[in-house]
Length: 196
View 1 (cartoon, rainbow, N blue to C red):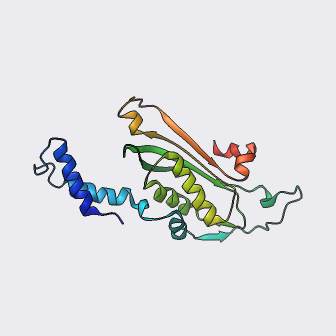
View 2: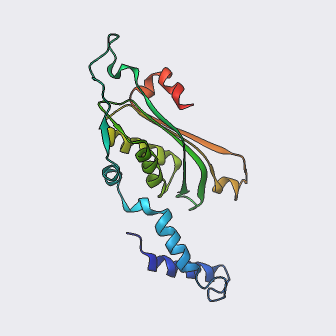
View 3: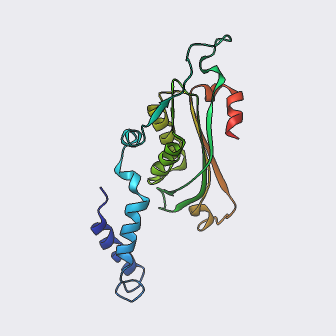
């Protein structure tokens, strides 16, 4: 679990190391506020992927027979795609914000579907960790596979990184795109169309 008291102490030390006075009017409650913010924005660090899957494991029968169709394919060509899911995260290299992120999550139902709000909740919880953008996609895909039982899952992410836009190279309009393709999404270009 997140240790808010330790965070407060370290933030106070950082303020001193920056040459400021942590007891001045504008900063005296900053360590407490930062600790509270970190508890919220890093909540996902308290849970494994399996625990997140258990939190949002409400599924419904998809109402279809999963026998192969006349053309030999399972699932009758169905695909579920949820686009433009807003999320944010923090880069593990600089603890810098990854912002204006949009996720697309797609899967082929294999007998059951997950409620759409749960897809967005999975994305939110996974985002609340220190990590790389690539790991966000991998973790969302792993959780979606566990919840739905479908090996056919895809997650794309596009977003800005403040470690690129606000420091170092300072390229404000640079976006990063990542894709985690599993099962049929990896091999079928027709399915990849849904991820655009």
